[in-house]
Length: 235
Ligand SMILES: Nc1ccn([C@@H]2O[C@H](COP(=O)(O)OP(=O)(O)OP(=O)(O)O)[C@@H](O)[C@H]2O)c(=O)n1
Ligand SMILES: C[C@](O)(CO)[C@H](O)COP(=O)(O)O
Image 1: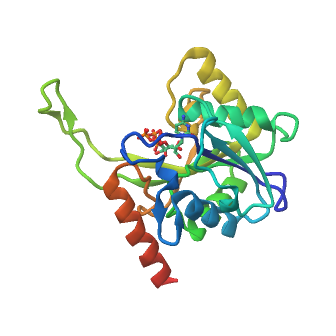
Image 2: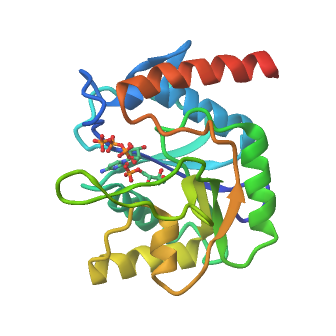
């Protein structure tokens, strides 16, 4: 970001929610008093009201309602086939607007439970760092690797393993280069950090709350509603 007054924020929201299996993309399902997208954008806006939002939407999206966008400065970007392609399209749209040194924060529309405290901690950590980084939480379950008959082939150590979350924040120039590199070399990246890692850089892991869940399956939606309720009771 260039300063407190104009951070860049990319929200990939062009997914179809296949695993949710609902009648509409999961970002448009009701969650509390809003939609999933409405909750996510409200959380981001309360932390970073001056941000410029780049909102990646499917080109054929008929569900989008721009009254759900609380940001004064925002642009709609046509998303791509995969998440990283949606983020890349948003970075292309920032060409000529963002400087290489600006920080860009990317947050999934499907993570509506991110807290203001985690957003503030991430940003503070990024400002002290040269590379950039992401919210993440240490793995707490025992892990199993399957064989080709879906039996346990191994129990890998969870020591030093984290679950990657969002936001993920990097300088515009680095992230732009990382996604072009991933595109040119056909590297399949599921988050910004892995694209940056492919450049030989080491993103910072910033410990975040484990309830910053990604809504993926139907049960996650009910879980997210409970999390939002419990966070409201706690505040
Ligand atoms: N082509 C895509 C695919 C995904 N996303 C976004 O990336 C985030 C994480 O993706 P995921 O949870 O996999 O969402 P979907 O692609 O919607 O879900 P599914 O894989 O079940 O279809 C979501 O905010 C989603 O909207 C995107 O902007 N563009
Ligand atoms: C970026 C991400 O949220 C990190 O956990 C995640 O990888 C995105 O979801 P996908 O299912 O991998 O597209």
